[in-house]
Length: 286
Image (cartoon, rainbow, N blue to C red; front, side, top):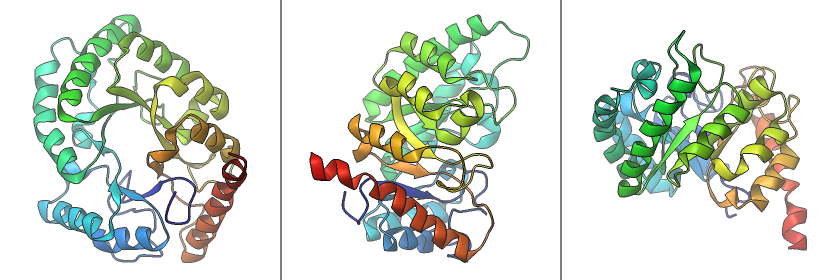
């Protein structure tokens, strides 16, 4: 890759809250321009702006202008605001009309920002049979995949247990559902923090799901902190990701920090560079 990294990494402007961008100590400003500029300065390839759909128009414009100015890429955006995302709309047999209205807003925004993917979370219905919910989910995601294909984007589904009531609660379950969907424009968002919490074996889960993975997001565990500070073997994972051809797509650094300070953030950048540098040997022997 260019920008002095082997892979194409993206910082974030707040995956839980827009008040908590990745480099909030190193960049005290909340102006998205300043955070995009910082990402460019340290050689990253993009920025994750997940909640663009619910942010003020002026801020979205500022983010878009910064991407163009610094020639960075947008990562995924969420298809609807948080309050909407955490409802069981995807497993409702009558949910498609509401989903289509959400896509009427989010698809043009993704196209404008150059975001390649719309992220989806799947809230379940408490007490309802899981099998029947999966049946509805498969149908709705196939329809969403058809719509996304016409728009030149992809639907990304993120499985997790970090939020209560999620339907897809393990990688094994997610793979089973994705095997049924079998749509090239519906892919899996593989978040190492969530997968470690669910499955306890990130590398094994990745090998199980690799044929469906369209986006990788990095967070170490416990604590959803910077890579290199927890238990996950990122060196081996990234080697396999690169071998599978995902090395040319953005990889989101979607994590927090062991503590909030400039020193910790700068140490985290150095640690990520060390992890990334282990891929040099692949380049040398290819």
